[in-house]
Length: 369
Ligand code: OSB
Ligand code: MG
Image 1 (tube, protein in one colour):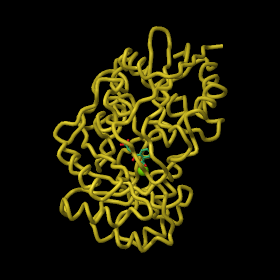
Image 2: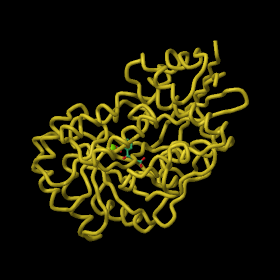
Image 3: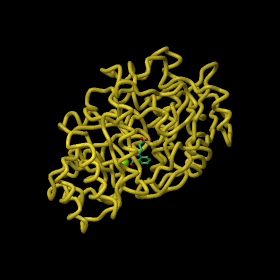
């Protein structure tokens, strides 16, 4: 295809409740949507970058800048673009994976809509629904945590992940085991908040039969994760550290992770995400699909990715209403603990224009030179 134009839209959507991690508290999601146009066809890609550079070095305004100045013109100036060549076209720009991923997704969505093919079919997904896990933020008190988790279990979520940080680690896990028993699938996510000097905390967590510990240490230290993995029995899972298939191969080879969280945005796109899935399967490493507070656009695409056969653990693929009272697409629903894999053309249902306009706070457009 030849791209005719790119529209960048910033949406601002209030969260149903504050979401606290080891790196901060969010009360509103500001997200960038990329709208690609070619002839009469359109495609949408959601960027996972957050407003501030706290989870990753990328952030919303930085993404808009790098797309506007560099990545957008590279795609708009190309004689022909396909989803499969976006990565190579943008390769000269170092990093900025979340920005690149959003562009690739918009092109892929357009390409699939034009061909009348679903993302699930394109990927070779093997399931029509995926188990739904929920990521639970740090709460004001242990009692609040038990109540909030109880609510999600009542809604049918099949796996609970709680955010931890130093001082909010062993006690919340113990409280959940006491309240709900040893049987509920439970895991923790530290978002890099600990050091190897906290090894005693992780040894204590070993007692609770957790599915995994996600990203306990620095994002750029694979070796220390390998050291920690040798010290504890709970599987170590990496999120922030896995920025590419190469990083995944290193982590696996060094024994730094026996489980991987795959987020397409973090690794530069859904095609790289699938390469990591394939690599993990070949190495006997379990993967699951992470989330980034996506709207229905990114959430739907994640559901299709998670329907690949190597995604053997439940993902952070919750219903729209876990974060948003009103989504910009028809809401993603949880039914019997699962989310349906979208079967329509493209990567997600189209946003509903009135709902999208109601939350759009900024728009910019660029066209082919
Ligand atoms: O580390 O997985 C993470 C949200 C924002 C940034 C990082 C993370 C998260 C989550 C939420 O855990 C996952 C979701 O969207 O449900
Ligand atoms: Mg994480």
